[in-house]
Image (cartoon, rainbow, N blue to C red):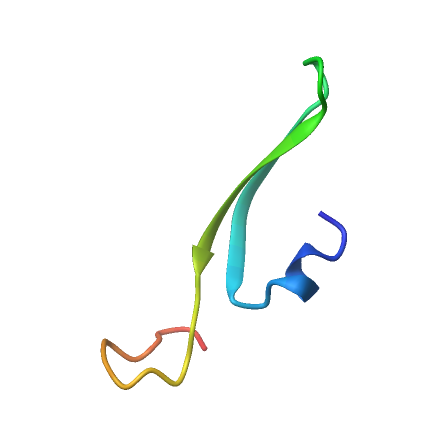
Length: 47
């Protein structure tokens, strides 16, 4: 997860799980796309 937020500023991570108990260690990352400056849709509640 190091550097993920810097490389992906428009993705807000809300859950990340690392699996080390399987043959190949890997991550499951859950995120929500986030954008500002859109001309359509509701204004953000939390900028």
